[in-house]
Structures are given as structure tokens and as C-alpha cells.
Amino acid sequence: MKSTPLRIFLVYLLLCFIWGSTWLAIRASLESLTPFISGGSRFLLASIFILALMKFRGVSLQTDRESVRLYLLMGFLSFVIPFGLVYWAEQFVPSGLASVLFGVYPFFVAIFSFFRLPDEPIGKLKIVGMISGFLGIVVIFSDSFSADLTNFLLGMIAVALSGIIQAWIAVTLKKSGKHLNPLSMNFIPMLIAGVFGLMIGILVEDLSKLRFDDTAIISVTYLAFFGSVVTFTSFYWLMKRINVVLLSLVAFITPIVALILGWIFYNETLSEQHIIGSIMVLAGLLIANLGSVIKEKIEVQKSL
Image (cartoon, rainbow, N blue to C red; front, side):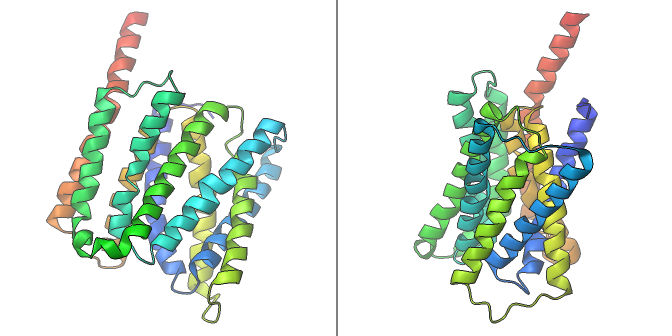
């Protein structure tokens, strides 16, 4: 696939929209399923979809030692542990506060990139953009902070730790996973996440109220194909083509998409503070990208 600027921009938008919509799909799935059964079913089904796509497109699984090492790291550090921490934490932490806490992700991507990716400078504009985006998320979800935080301390730590782990694995893949195919690199990790998720669900969750009804089937299928196969394949495709810090700012956009979709489908309130916070996030994203645009124009002028 040719990586023109327009194609990169459209894939980035698609990633933001679909990942933003997964919050609603997860919410729908949990009306019928327990958290780990829902998550495990999602990733197991996603791995089956990926295997079918690999067969259809003639993509082989890379089995060299470094690839297998990265598969195992991804399985546990991209899926099993981070998703497990978030699912567990959401028993104690409001989703709005969780979104703010996960906002540490882009900052730690920047920190890890500084030490491990010298060819990808952070730059002042990216720092300003990240701060603006994070403050925008704080404004959007500030109503979530009214609870007694002492009761949510472990949950808060779990969500923040999830973001830090995901940041580390993202930078690791940017540094060491350039040889991996964006499609095949998801098969083993999602298979691991599916199997472990279902095992944990069967062992520790109350399964007496499970209902495999239309809502469960549709939501899990959507999460598996669009929320996992399409998004993670797009994410790793973009990772090979744009700065990893810019890519991490997707974490600031998806809560805005979730807010808008919640307003449309669940009649949730869309207040003035939501709009102001969203503008701050979008402004931060624009500022963070400005440096890349200016640099590209300078390079074009030099080549003339």
C-alpha cells in the first residue's frame, strides 16, 4: 500500500473513529457478558479473522527468533496485562477519570522515544501539543473527579500503569519491529490475549448471568473485526510511516469520538466543557503536527 500523506491522514482518522467507537461497543457487550469473557472472546475471534486474512492474502507468519520474542511481548504487554488492568480498574474508577489517567500514554511514548529512538526527535511543538491535549482531556472529564480518590487509588495506579506499559511496547515495536508485517504481527498476540482472557474469565468471574444474545454477538464481532483487526493493523501500518509520538496522540482523540457517539446513540449530555476540552485536544493535535508540516515544506523547497 502506497503511503501518500492523504492515505496516512485518512488511516489516522479511521483509527481515531473506530477506537473511539469501541467504548460504546464494550459497554454494549458488558450488558450480556462479563469483562474477561467479553475481552477474551473479542481477541480470540480477532485472531481467527487475522488468520483467514493471512491465508487470503498469502501472508506468512514470521517465525524467526526476534519475531517470536516480539509476539510474546505484544501478547502480554499490548493485550493481556494492559487490558486486564483497565478492565479490573473500571470496577473502581469512573470511565472519565480512566481516560485522563490513560493520558499518560503519549507522555511516556515521548519519554521512551527520547532514550530509545534518537532518529525521532520530540521537538517543542510536540510537547506543547501533548500538554494541550492532556489538559483538554482533563477539562472534558473534570466532573469525574468528585469521588473520594482514596477509594480508587489502586484502580488509578492500574490505569496509569496500563498506559505506561503500552507506551513502552509501542516504542519497542517502533525500534525493533520494522521487519514485521502489520497483519501477521497481530495473530499470535491476539491469540494469546483471547486464550488468557477466557481462562481468567472462566476461573474468576461469575458466569451465571452470561447471555450470548444478539447484543453480545454483534458487539463482540464488531470489537473483534473493526475494533481489533482493522485498528491494530492500521496502528502498526502507521507506526512504520509516522513519528510514534504523533501516533500516540490518538489516545487524546478517541475519548472525544466516544463522547459524540454517546451523545448520538445513548442521549448522553454534551456540555460546554466537553466542547471546550475537545477544542483544546484538537488544537494540541494541530500544534503537534505543525512541526512535521513545516519540516516537510522546508525539505520540498530545498529539493527545488
